Amino acid sequence: MCALLRDRARWWYGLPLLRYPQAKIAARLREMGYRCPPAVDAAPRYELPRSVDPAHVPLVLETLWRTFGGVSLADDSYGHVEFWDRKLGDRACWASNGTDVLWIDGPRFIRPRPVGRDGSGGGGFVELALDKLHKDDISGGPPLGVVVHHDPPLDPLFCEQHKYEEAQKRADKSEYDANLLAYFMKDCSEEVARRIVKDDWDKWEPPLTLINYLRKSVLEAGGFPGLKDSKYISKSLIEAGIFSGMNLSGDWEDFEPHRLELIADLEPF
Image (tube, rainbow, N blue to C red; front, side):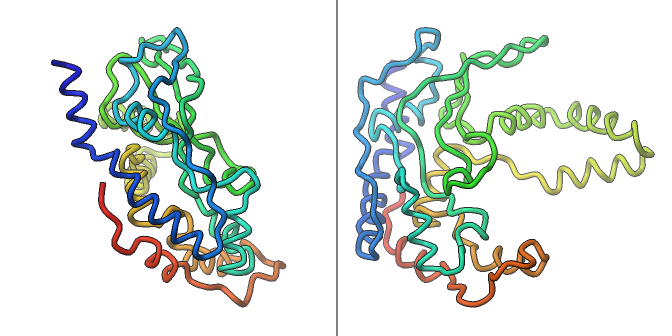
């Protein structure tokens, strides 16, 4: 019965349907002169480390691995960076904080997570993608992935490990606020500390789940979510003086017409 429910959930999430919009985007990119990497083979018999119970792997990740192995529009030579540099001009990819090209690795090693004094943690962290800067061969932050443990959600958060742990802490808002307030009150008044805590909540955005990352990357951004607002971000950085002394004026081209071409008539999943 459990196996039947898991099978139905696979199709309810619609993840196998990802193959159709992904194939359309790849074909359109090739027509634009983009060199797409070869498709990743599905991995119906992928192996996990002995320490990891297969039942602890989130269903969406398991389905992705078994159906596709992995998904990516990047190649090892960073051809996607050169391509969009030519299309958008003047290092647009870099200045806009990266292309954030669609990228999910196939089955790979699961790094154990330490168990805290309170019993939290345990399980493992699966590294699935470089962060958006490392994807473009720029020094950046830690890799993104999902957590595996004894009670996995169907659709896990897809983010850096420390952001996952922060999200877990924020799940109990009252305890999180109390701890943060106590931390800031070491150096300022309670009134100021409360404003800092409120500002922290106002600015915080919960991490995307894995399926929502895929939907956003494919259906909304044509495989390059980092470029979706490239013109706006680049101009704002220039106006802020971040690139003072660098020749970044001139031939910025908006990514929007390319995005609309890539996502036209894509089937949802």
